[in-house]
Image 1 (cartoon, rainbow, N blue to C red):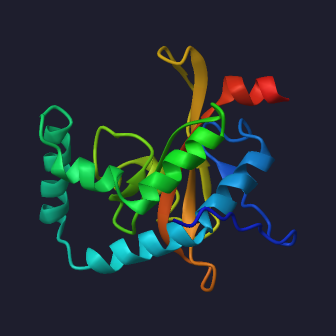
Image 2 (image 1 turned 180 degrees about the vertical axis):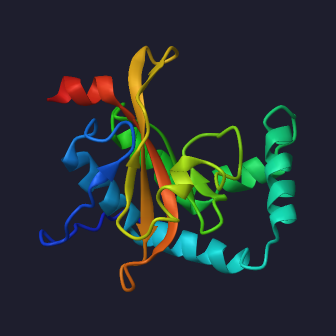
Length: 191
Protein backbone atom coordinates (compact mmCIF):
# COMPACT_ATOMS: atom_id res chain seq x y z
CA UNK A 1 0.00 0.00 0.00
CA UNK A 2 1.26 3.48 -0.86
CA UNK A 3 1.45 5.87 2.05
CA UNK A 4 3.45 8.65 0.52
CA UNK A 5 2.23 12.18 0.82
CA UNK A 6 2.56 14.54 -2.11
CA UNK A 7 3.81 17.98 -1.12
CA UNK A 8 2.12 20.73 -3.08
CA UNK A 9 4.31 23.34 -4.72
CA UNK A 10 4.42 26.60 -2.78
CA UNK A 11 2.88 28.37 -5.77
CA UNK A 12 -0.38 26.37 -5.64
CA UNK A 13 -2.88 28.51 -3.81
CA UNK A 14 -5.39 27.03 -1.45
CA UNK A 15 -8.91 28.05 -2.38
CA UNK A 16 -10.82 30.40 -0.17
CA UNK A 17 -12.98 28.50 2.24
CA UNK A 18 -16.72 28.82 2.30
CA UNK A 19 -19.40 27.64 4.66
CA UNK A 20 -20.52 28.42 8.20
CA UNK A 21 -17.23 27.12 9.64
CA UNK A 22 -14.97 29.03 7.23
CA UNK A 23 -11.92 30.34 9.00
CA UNK A 24 -12.17 27.79 11.83
CA UNK A 25 -9.60 25.36 10.39
CA UNK A 26 -5.92 26.27 10.27
CA UNK A 27 -4.60 26.82 6.71
CA UNK A 28 -1.77 24.36 7.36
CA UNK A 29 -4.33 21.64 8.02
CA UNK A 30 -6.12 22.46 4.77
CA UNK A 31 -2.79 22.17 2.93
CA UNK A 32 -2.06 18.86 4.69
CA UNK A 33 -5.46 17.45 3.71
CA UNK A 34 -5.00 18.58 0.09
CA UNK A 35 -1.67 16.71 0.07
CA UNK A 36 -3.34 13.54 1.41
CA UNK A 37 -5.94 13.82 -1.34
CA UNK A 38 -3.21 14.12 -3.99
CA UNK A 39 -1.70 10.78 -2.99
CA UNK A 40 -1.63 8.00 -5.55
CA UNK A 41 -3.89 5.70 -3.53
CA UNK A 42 -6.65 8.34 -3.31
CA UNK A 43 -6.35 9.30 -6.96
CA UNK A 44 -6.35 5.71 -8.23
CA UNK A 45 -9.20 4.60 -5.96
CA UNK A 46 -11.51 7.48 -6.90
CA UNK A 47 -10.78 7.17 -10.64
CA UNK A 48 -11.32 3.39 -10.52
CA UNK A 49 -14.69 3.76 -8.79
CA UNK A 50 -15.72 6.54 -11.19
CA UNK A 51 -15.09 4.13 -14.09
CA UNK A 52 -16.69 1.16 -12.32
CA UNK A 53 -19.90 3.04 -11.47
CA UNK A 54 -20.05 5.37 -14.49
CA UNK A 55 -23.33 3.87 -15.69
CA UNK A 56 -25.09 3.60 -12.32
CA UNK A 57 -28.58 5.06 -12.37
CA UNK A 58 -30.07 7.13 -9.57
CA UNK A 59 -32.23 4.13 -8.63
CA UNK A 60 -29.17 1.88 -8.38
CA UNK A 61 -27.38 4.43 -6.21
CA UNK A 62 -30.43 4.68 -3.94
CA UNK A 63 -30.53 0.89 -3.74
CA UNK A 64 -26.85 0.80 -2.65
CA UNK A 65 -27.48 3.53 -0.09
CA UNK A 66 -30.49 1.66 1.32
CA UNK A 67 -28.44 -1.54 1.48
CA UNK A 68 -25.68 0.28 3.40
CA UNK A 69 -28.18 1.78 5.88
CA UNK A 70 -29.69 -1.65 6.53
CA UNK A 71 -26.24 -3.19 6.97
CA UNK A 72 -25.38 -0.69 9.73
CA UNK A 73 -28.00 -2.49 11.85
CA UNK A 74 -27.48 -6.03 10.50
CA UNK A 75 -25.07 -8.77 11.50
CA UNK A 76 -23.87 -9.43 7.94
CA UNK A 77 -22.30 -6.37 6.31
CA UNK A 78 -20.94 -7.29 2.85
CA UNK A 79 -21.04 -3.78 1.33
CA UNK A 80 -19.69 -2.11 4.46
CA UNK A 81 -17.01 -4.77 4.90
CA UNK A 82 -15.90 -4.49 1.27
CA UNK A 83 -15.57 -0.71 1.59
CA UNK A 84 -13.82 -0.70 4.97
CA UNK A 85 -11.33 -3.36 3.89
CA UNK A 86 -10.25 -1.75 0.62
CA UNK A 87 -6.77 -0.16 0.25
CA UNK A 88 -8.11 3.41 0.37
CA UNK A 89 -9.92 2.78 3.66
CA UNK A 90 -6.73 1.28 5.10
CA UNK A 91 -4.84 4.42 4.03
CA UNK A 92 -7.48 6.75 5.52
CA UNK A 93 -7.51 4.77 8.76
CA UNK A 94 -3.74 5.18 9.01
CA UNK A 95 -3.97 8.92 8.24
CA UNK A 96 -6.55 9.27 11.01
CA UNK A 97 -4.46 7.25 13.47
CA UNK A 98 -1.30 9.22 12.65
CA UNK A 99 -3.13 12.50 13.26
CA UNK A 100 -3.15 11.72 17.00
CA UNK A 101 -6.73 12.85 17.51
CA UNK A 102 -6.81 15.76 15.07
CA UNK A 103 -8.92 13.87 12.49
CA UNK A 104 -11.79 11.91 14.01
CA UNK A 105 -13.39 10.66 10.79
CA UNK A 106 -12.34 10.64 7.13
CA UNK A 107 -14.15 9.56 4.00
CA UNK A 108 -13.65 10.00 0.27
CA UNK A 109 -16.46 10.12 -2.29
CA UNK A 110 -16.60 9.55 -6.04
CA UNK A 111 -18.11 11.73 -8.77
CA UNK A 112 -21.62 10.59 -7.84
CA UNK A 113 -21.21 11.17 -4.10
CA UNK A 114 -20.82 7.49 -3.15
CA UNK A 115 -18.24 6.47 -0.56
CA UNK A 116 -14.99 5.14 -2.03
CA UNK A 117 -13.11 4.69 1.24
CA UNK A 118 -13.45 5.70 4.85
CA UNK A 119 -11.79 5.44 8.23
CA UNK A 120 -14.97 4.33 10.04
CA UNK A 121 -18.54 3.35 9.23
CA UNK A 122 -20.71 6.25 8.12
CA UNK A 123 -24.48 6.24 8.52
CA UNK A 124 -25.02 6.27 4.75
CA UNK A 125 -23.22 5.30 1.55
CA UNK A 126 -24.38 8.12 -0.71
CA UNK A 127 -23.39 11.69 0.22
CA UNK A 128 -24.54 13.25 -3.07
CA UNK A 129 -27.55 14.90 -1.44
CA UNK A 130 -25.42 16.64 1.20
CA UNK A 131 -23.45 19.89 1.29
CA UNK A 132 -20.16 18.01 1.79
CA UNK A 133 -20.41 16.80 -1.82
CA UNK A 134 -22.61 19.43 -3.43
CA UNK A 135 -20.56 22.41 -2.21
CA UNK A 136 -17.25 20.85 -3.24
CA UNK A 137 -17.45 18.48 -6.19
CA UNK A 138 -20.25 20.36 -7.94
CA UNK A 139 -18.53 23.74 -7.47
CA UNK A 140 -15.24 22.85 -9.14
CA UNK A 141 -11.58 22.17 -8.50
CA UNK A 142 -9.68 23.41 -5.45
CA UNK A 143 -12.91 23.90 -3.50
CA UNK A 144 -13.08 23.96 0.30
CA UNK A 145 -16.35 23.97 2.27
CA UNK A 146 -16.26 23.95 6.08
CA UNK A 147 -19.50 23.10 7.80
CA UNK A 148 -20.70 24.55 11.10
CA UNK A 149 -18.80 23.42 14.20
CA UNK A 150 -20.61 20.99 16.51
CA UNK A 151 -19.94 19.63 19.97
CA UNK A 152 -19.33 15.86 19.87
CA UNK A 153 -20.50 14.46 23.21
CA UNK A 154 -18.64 11.17 22.69
CA UNK A 155 -15.34 12.96 22.08
CA UNK A 156 -16.16 15.77 24.51
CA UNK A 157 -14.75 18.13 21.89
CA UNK A 158 -15.85 20.61 19.27
CA UNK A 159 -15.51 19.22 15.74
CA UNK A 160 -16.06 20.54 12.23
CA UNK A 161 -16.27 18.85 8.84
CA UNK A 162 -13.60 20.06 6.43
CA UNK A 163 -14.88 19.14 2.96
CA UNK A 164 -12.74 19.43 -0.16
CA UNK A 165 -12.84 18.50 -3.80
CA UNK A 166 -10.52 15.67 -4.85
CA UNK A 167 -8.86 17.04 -7.97
CA UNK A 168 -7.09 15.35 -10.84
CA UNK A 169 -3.53 16.74 -10.76
CA UNK A 170 -3.36 16.99 -14.58
CA UNK A 171 -6.73 18.56 -15.37
CA UNK A 172 -7.26 20.33 -12.02
CA UNK A 173 -10.91 19.26 -12.31
CA UNK A 174 -12.70 17.49 -9.46
CA UNK A 175 -12.98 13.71 -9.64
CA UNK A 176 -14.57 13.34 -6.21
CA UNK A 177 -14.75 14.91 -2.77
CA UNK A 178 -13.56 14.19 0.75
CA UNK A 179 -14.58 14.93 4.31
CA UNK A 180 -12.12 15.21 7.18
CA UNK A 181 -13.77 15.73 10.53
CA UNK A 182 -11.38 17.99 12.44
CA UNK A 183 -11.21 18.04 16.23
CA UNK A 184 -11.06 21.81 16.82
CA UNK A 185 -10.33 21.30 20.49
CA UNK A 186 -7.21 19.29 19.58
CA UNK A 187 -6.25 21.82 16.91
CA UNK A 188 -6.41 24.64 19.48
CA UNK A 189 -4.40 22.58 21.99
CA UNK A 190 -1.59 22.18 19.43
CA UNK A 191 -1.32 25.93 18.89
